[in-house]
Length: 90
Length: 405
Image 1 (tube, each protein chain N blue to C red):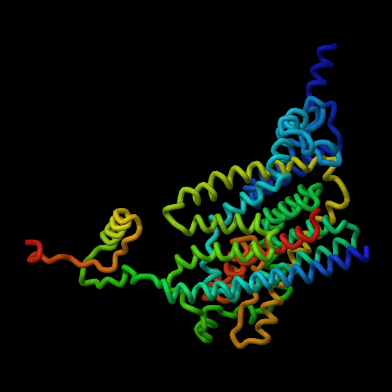
Image 2 (image 1 turned 30 degrees about the vertical axis):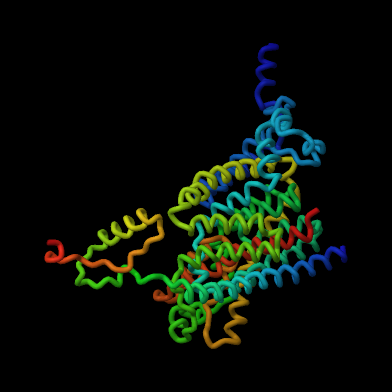
């Protein structure tokens, strides 16, 4: 029995230290990962940043984004949407 | 007359024992709790029904009930082929020895849990992940207590893991360390998880005062800013489970069957449309099928001869203690942190450091709102709650690597 108690106490210490170590690594690596992604792969400007005067409806934006993604196999990104004016059309 | 005798022998009436009747009562109570009270019905109903059908005599050709037979009752069973097990011991034993005893189903369920989990709240509040570690204290404390009252160290570990508040983890650990306790450990784990709305407020009431419960997390963030802004959460969420599985695989490889499947499930969810079908399958049909087989066969391990023993009471009491100490451990870890830091954390964040996602977080949020209607801390509670899932899987890995074999 004393041997088993010793094992149990050892398990308590090792167990808690291991869980803390893993979660500390999660915190550290998570922060590191966020910094790296922020530095090298920040998200492209949100579509919501399109100016209201462009009068592009949200469902139209969604349709355009989906169409570009499908046609380019996910490689293409929509950075800017602007309406062509009537003069350009002619 | 002979016909009547044969008819009587065909029925189960001749073989009923008082133990079986008691097991029917227990099964009925569990069904009532699952169906009417809605205590974890997805698992409690299959477990209770498995218990019920395992306690009828004369089901098998041998005249025995169809419940799971342990390796002590049938020492040669592990050397039989699956066909022989199905033929001699029935389909429940076939399911048990092929899917449960091999440790297959709990990781499969964890894969589904991963596909339903969002690591976003944890990534946005990374420092709160530490409290998922403090809340594992109940596992190891109860392990020592159980040892002192006469359980073997493997049984004590299976009992302690109930404090992790994670059903698949408790089942997986018990299958490996003390499979004869599988039924009661599963019942205790899922019952206490269902009682989280009762247990957390009880422990919080005993350990926290009103001013602590009124600590507003959003206000603290405004007063003491310092969080890193995440500019591309989608990419972070995709890379995170890959990195995490590498870390866990290197440091606690024995936790990888559970944690690895959890992280895989999460990865296929976060990738998005290209793996959506896998994610939907993992969190839907696969998880549901696994839950049915797991519940039924775990319930069928509770035959009268195996279940009606004094040590079951020890498991019920010990499981409750493990739960309570885990919640208390998280709360006191937060109090310790608050003692040394200007930026305060609501102790309810510590209380959610055990798993039981997302019920523990919802309960914590409700308690916070009772004390301050503006104090919405669900997202913060989810951070420690999700880290608790990882924490309990790692704790299980430690127990398995030291005690298995």
